[in-house]
Length: 442
Ligand code: CTP
Image 1 (cartoon, helix red, strand yellow):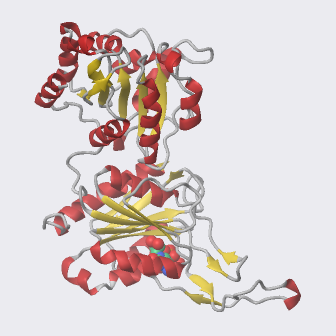
Image 2 (cartoon, rainbow, N blue to C red; image 1 turned 120 degrees about the vertical axis):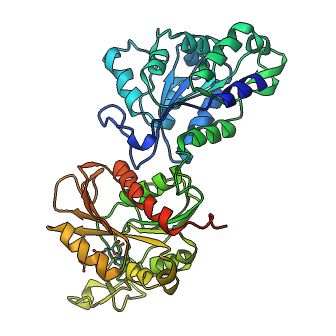
Image 3 (cartoon, rainbow, N blue to C red; image 1 turned 90 degrees about the horizontal axis):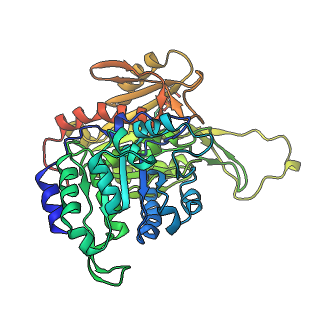
């Protein structure tokens, strides 16, 4: 649909709201792991069934989705389908019992990083263009400041109609983006323009809208480690720690959202890792050491968010140790310190690359210990948290950290790990700008 594309291109979006500042409302629309929360509006077109695939695609790319269906959409696809996939209640009506119509769309409007409507009918395009707010989706459109992306789908004559074209132009002039409909067999029996774009194209367009265009991390290689390591005592027992992997996964998701090429090296995390460019699963500190050292020379940034074991059994048994073998004394030996080894990389001494970020999980006076750790391990930033405080550290959704860097300490208020990830990457970006003036590596 060239008319749509041409108009949309002339008017780049004026929306400057960055998803990283999105304020997630835990009560209604809990957004985790730094993933972007997307409202997927589904309207009453035959292409509504494809929205299920769009939803899946967004999720596999690491986004959270809340589905908002119009009344007629629910005639094409059952809300239960979206509910099962998104694992969230699907919004089908403004007037559902128990829903506070006045505030619910405002809460979602504030929380989302993108409003995507696929398929978007002529009717909904008309409502959006003319400010009609007579259902949840049209109210959400008016209430949100998030970017809006529409995937129109309708009969080709309807699409070509002056009224629809004018509405599309109005929306494009307002900064609304479009995924052009394709040409092909239409449900009405015609062959022509108006068919909903393919789900993969819609997902790709959504990602493009979400990625902040000016991030210095775009195209840079960012290596993130996450989760605990397990140090085997014998084939059934191990020494581990309480790390869930949430913070590392949030960092990987946020770096990817900024356009970085992200390699995630994950221990046995309790959370599902986000979509990244390369996922390397490891178990022990030794495996993590090998994986990180192999990847690090190509990385622009290495973020060691993993809770790597400091000690490992000196002589792991190849067979299960029976209790009849008597009270066991476990002899432990030190693991190799990955971060310190990275700090000593000869190539880094010359270039300052990769930029190194470490974590310091402490109990009490975290910032002071982090300053000492930063100097000792020769890293650029140390993210310190006092794990003895409520709402910080292991197994919780939130974190309260101080980032210790070359220009001093910065203590952040308690916030979601996704928001902490964004703040850490905001602090990394100037270092990347300073040290990697050279073009993006191949
Ligand atoms: N780390 C690492 N390799 C290890 C242990 C830790 O790379 N074998 C990294 C962690 O990923 C983290 C940072 O080092 O980024 C801090 O971990 P911590 O265990 O607190 O550091 P230590 O220097 O061992 O501090 P302490 O002596 O206080 O335990």
